[in-house]
Structure formats: C-alpha cells, structure tokens
Amino acid sequence: MANSELHALLELLATPFTDPRTLVLFVLLVAAAMHDVRSYRIPNWLTGGGLAFALIYTALVPPVYNAAWTWAPAGMLLGFAALLPLYLLRAMGAGDVKLMAMTGAFLGLQGTVFALLFTFVTAGLAAFAYAAWHGVTRRMLGNTRRMLSDLAVASIGGAQPALAPQPGQSVGRLAYGVSIAAGTIASVFAAQLGLI
Image 1 (tube, helix red, strand yellow):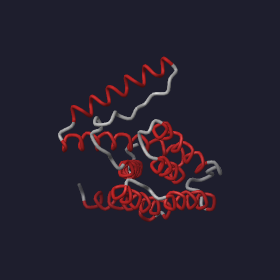
Image 2 (tube, helix red, strand yellow):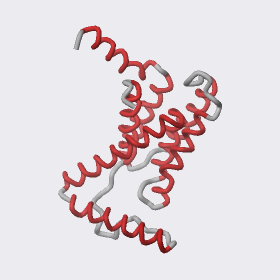
Image 3 (cartoon, helix red, strand yellow):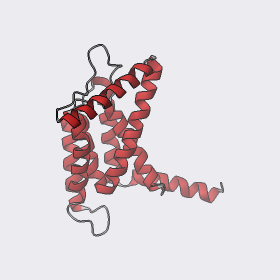
C-alpha cells in the first residue's frame, strides 16, 4: 500500500470522529456497553438523552441533503420494532430495545438495517465464544434447537411461545448492549469504507 493510499484510508477512518452525530453515538454506545457489562442494565437517562439529542440534532442539521423530517424517527422505529419481539419473548431486556431505538435515530432507516444485521452477527459470535469458553456449547445448541422447535409449534397452534430456557438449562447471560455497540460501530465503519 502506497503512502498516499494509507493516508487516504486513515482519513476515511477518521471521518466518523469528525462528525458530531457519529461521535456522540459512539460515546453513548460505549457507555451503554460498559453499563451493561457491569450491571446488565442500560440506564434510561443514557438512551433517552441520546434519543433526544439525535432527534433534535437531525432536525437542525440534516445528515444527508434533502433528508425528510422522518429520517431519524424512521430509524428509531425500525430499531425499536426489530428488537421488541425479542423483549416480549424475554430473550433480551428493555434497555437493549431502547438502545437500538436510540441508535436508529442516529443512523436513519438504511443505517439501522445494517446496524441490526451487524449486531445480530456480533451477538451470535459472542454467544458462541461465551459457550465455548465455558464449555457449554452443546447445551446452548440444544437450548436453541428446543426454543426454535417450541416457537414453531406455538406459532402453528396459535399459542404464545416461551423461549426462556427451563431453570438449570441456561448457559449464562450476555450483555447484549456490547453486541449492539460493536455491531453498530462496525457497520458505520463498513459504510464509511464503502463495504456496504
């Protein structure tokens, strides 16, 4: 790689840190991940404050030329709606849903789609790493198979599925805020590099 190409790459990677919207998003995501790791909770002041900032800042400084006023609310609603079913099935906490809604307000509709995809991949990799580290991969895969089977049977029969594993079957708990932070940050950089 030539010196000029390296300089251009470094400049491209630094761009998210020069945009106040992205810089604030990254700070909030890292803070949420740290809170989630420590207490398995993401504070409402963090998600609510971030959401208010994103909605107001986007209304005052549109992120893209001719962005409609619905740009941030559309991303927020997508982030919320995508994770709400997992909360209702007790597969994640309310703070995670609110964090993804806040993230969506910063990224808009298209950015939120990629952030969600990257987050799901990151969460899957984190779950496998956790299970492998603790030697419970077989039990985790069994739980996943059982939950998917129960979900299919419940959806056919019209009942509400119970996706939470039975007592003694759980393989542990992950701080999903870390996956949201890592996945979102990775998706922003991937978009900046033109990979998505």
